[in-house]
Length: 155
Image (tube, rainbow, N blue to C red; front, side, top):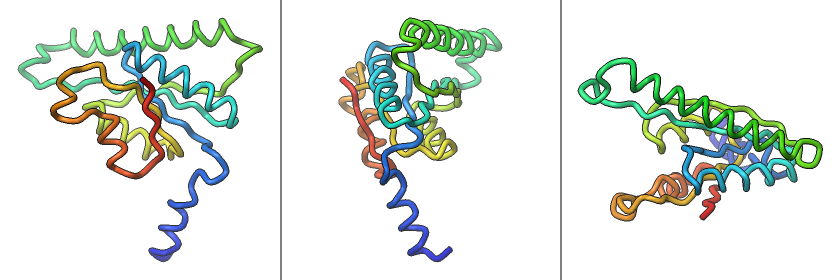
């Protein structure tokens, strides 16, 4: 494939509407609103909703063994249970194809990896609820600046 064909293929991705929508969730209110928004978008576009939880990787000094890994796994399991419960409540009214994925790392790099591996046509995230992000830049802003997918930020 020539460079021009490769560029055209990347540019044309999603021209008929997204087929894979990646949404990042972390349990925060804004991420759950983002998941609801992405679910509606996936339903209308008949796209696959890829729900992604990025498990934080802590330094060896901070990790102190298995309890941290257990905690992040419990968070992931809790999020899956919450998603299943929400989808069961609207079954038959609001059907959407979805998958749940976990990636490890910081939220930005985890979502970039997820979007690349899942061949995302669009990425949806909640607006940052952290004051610190106003200084160093939110995950949403960094995803937009990457310029690789359409990014929707849900307040």
